[in-house]
Length: 306
Ligand SMILES: Cc1cc2nc3c(=O)[nH]c(=O)nc-3n(C[C@H](O)[C@H](O)[C@H](O)COP(=O)(O)OP(=O)(O)OC[C@H]3O[C@@H](n4cnc5c(N)ncnc54)[C@H](O)[C@@H]3O)c2cc1C
Image: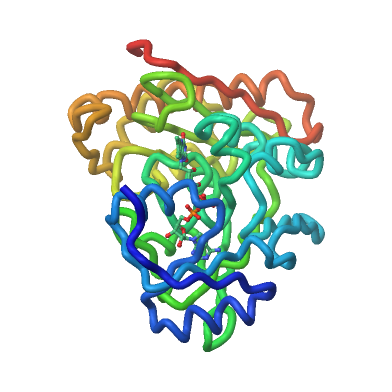
C-alpha cells in the first residue's frame, strides 16, 4: 500500500519545525529516520495531515560533552553511535547495545529521537537510556522542558509528549563503572523477546553500589526493577543475592503474549536473565582494576532456550 495524502515540510531549524507542528494542531508527525514511521504510513495505520521532516535541522545531530554529562542530539543515527569513539569511551553501554538493533540499513537511518518517541517496549536504546538515568529534552510552542526517561512512557508506544513537541536530544549523566547486557532474540538482530541490562559500581572491598537493573519486552515499556537493584546495595553479588534479585524483578513486569513468545514464557525468562546479567556484572567488576573506567560484559542469545 501507499500512504494517504499528506503535506510535507522540510524545516532547517528547531523553531521552524515546532512552528509547523503547531500550525497543524497535533495532526502532523515528525519524520526522522522513517524506520517506524514510513511502514505505519504505508499500511495507513497512521494518516497524519503533514510530515515535518527534520533531516535538515543541523542543530540536532551533535554529540556534546560537558563534564560527566553527555548529550546526544535527536538526529544522531544509530550508526553514528556505533562508530563514535566519544560514545565508546563515555557511554560503553550505548556503544554495545546499538549493535543489537535491527540490521545495517535500520542503523544507518534510525535516530536517537525516533527510537525514544517510538518507545518500542523491546527497544534496546530506550532500555539503555532508562537504566542510565537519561533525561529527554523537548521543545514545543511553550518552550523547552526536560523529561526523565522514567517519566516519558505512559503506555504501550505512548509518551507524555505533547503532539506539537519536538524531541531535541537526550542527556546522559555519569556512566556507571560496570555494565552487563543480555537479550533473547529468535534470530540475530530481531526484536528481543526479553532483554536485560545491569549497571553498577564496585568498591575496593568488592561491595557493589547503585546497582540498577532494567528489563525490556516484559511490560508496555522498558521497566526498572528498582527494588531488585536497591536490595543489592553494599552486597558482594553472591549467588543468593542474584537469585533474590531475579525473584524481586518479577514484581515490576506485566508481560504480553505476542507472535514472539507467551507471557508465561517471558515470566519464566525474567529471573533467568536478571541472574545472567548480574553474574556478568560481577565478573566485569572482579576482572577490572578499580578506577580503570567503565567495563562491559555483553552477551546475546539467538534463539536458544535458557
Ligand atoms: C526491519 C527493522 C528492524 C528493527 N529492529 C529493531 C530492533 O532490533 N531493536 C529496536 O530497538 N528497534 C528496531 N527497529 C525499530 C527502529 O529502531 C525504529 O524504527 C527507530 O528507532 C525509529 O527511529 P527513526 O529515526 O527511524 O524514527 P521515525 O520512524 O522517523 O519516527 C518514529 C516515531 O517517532 C516520531 N519522532 C521521530 N523523531 C522525533 C523527534 N525528534 N521528536 C518527536 N517525535 C519524533 C515520529 O513522528 C514517529 O512517531 C527495527 C525497525 C525495522 C524497520
